[in-house]
Image (cartoon, rainbow, N blue to C red; front, side, top):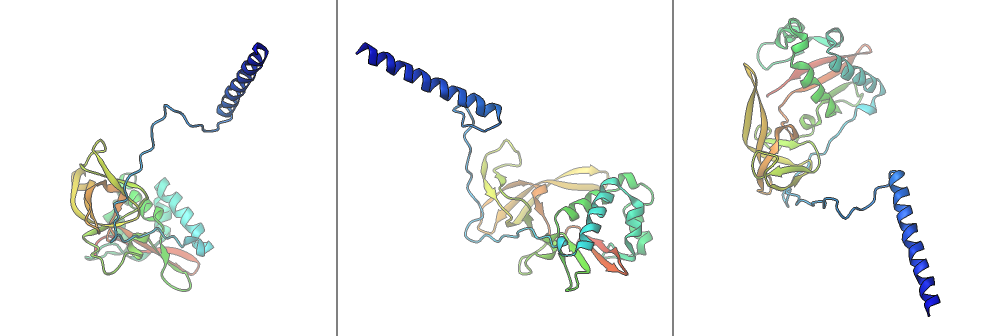
Length: 254
């Protein structure tokens, strides 16, 4: 009996040692293992509800290899604040306001690209427009407009009162604070804006930090403003003429 007990103890020690060795090896190889001390993953409720309308991202740039290559250069130029590249690829009669337009000279003056290019707000706006992708406006794919929030937004939803959530699993808070209770999430939903919380970015410029929103199913809460994009915010169009892509409009509003 003692002999069997000794054999059993040896087997148990061997199994325990093997399990420990395997866990150490897996950690060294970067394999994720469940940890009894790890934080439990919270599953939030999708607040879209039965009347939810989605606006999923669309980007057709790759359908025209010429534009796709140009788009990459344009993105790089925006990051580098390359004024000369923008000037070379801007139409002389660019439309940049719903008031009087004073050709390319007025556009550069409007965005201070002629007087303060390093501090111009144009670069950030352009990067946001390009990063959201867009679609071609003709069969020949020689006219591209971005972002998709502008080109694809449903015509039967008020563009001035609603925004599109531009990411998935965006947390909706009970208060305009990331420490507040999380009510649930929204994914690429169109929501109504009830209130905008603003902060001053400059002497004459304000930008929202939080949006109080209501889903189309009636759920209300707050989201960081960066996740809600208005279809009447800045958008741009680039058209190919004689082998060169040029910006024909860059405008906001209606």
